[in-house]
Image 1 (cartoon, rainbow, N blue to C red):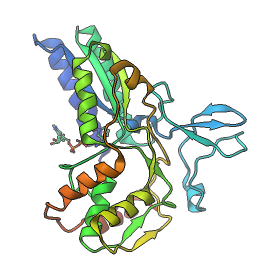
Image 2: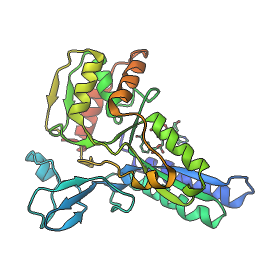
Image 3: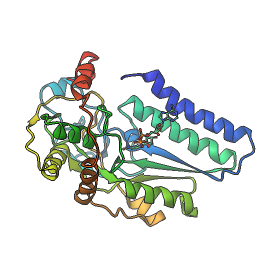
Image 4: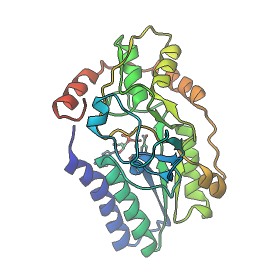
Length: 286
Ligand SMILES: NC(=O)c1ccc[n+]([C@@H]2O[C@H](COP(=O)([O-])OP(=O)(O)OC[C@H]3O[C@@H](n4cnc5c(N)ncnc54)[C@H](O)[C@@H]3O)[C@@H](O)[C@H]2O)c1
């Protein structure tokens, strides 16, 4: 599961091949839209009473082993206030995936203008909706939890369950991407795409259990995955201002559409236990 050179080959190498073709052949391509990710930001932006805006580094295993899951920052004494991440926020990915996504974004944003093509980058938050993969146990918390619930297994919530993400419904992602293809104002720009709302993992589990009308055991385990961030949600000021984008589907409505769709699918037994075992063996999860 942890194939660093493969990730690099696909995300960076694949983008390089595409740019080589665009640079070295005659094409009618006018614009390239790159599906970048909030993963490039790593931990989000925070306000420190003492220090102003700060970008905490990745959490250490030492602190998380003690059950200290919130981020900290040297010299910041009072509790940090989570802020939405804007496009000018520090780029400091905490995963190989995030590193490759930033490379991909930079390559598109740098090479395209030099060859007469307009680049646009969208940094999507956590995308979800009908049609997403239900079988990949390493990613997509809604799919993982849904599969566990539907196969009568307990849910193991990592950390203390208060970690949060900005879940954005697929139709909003399509809407933003379409604006990025059509609008002149999008050219050579980078935009966040999300809802601007942070939802905790515990809330996600409760809402799903309710929607499936299930009786699932939930265990908040204190387990954690190295490289996972604590919180991140999008500042949408730029995309609102420049592209007139407004997310149209709130989490409750989107989740209902997602679970309605899951209810029509045949659920394959979860490879979740296997994936947990593998991550533990590789030292990626504690
Ligand atoms: N899903 C999210 O929450 C999210 C968030 C931010 C960014 N993104 C980005 O959006 C894009 C699509 O993600 P997704 O979640 O829809 O993923 P997905 O797994 O549903 O789709 C990925 C697609 O890429 C194809 N693919 C995989 N390996 C390939 C290869 N070696 N060569 C050619 N094609 C290959 C797959 O067949 C599939 O069609 C990715 O670039 C991802 O990094 C996704």
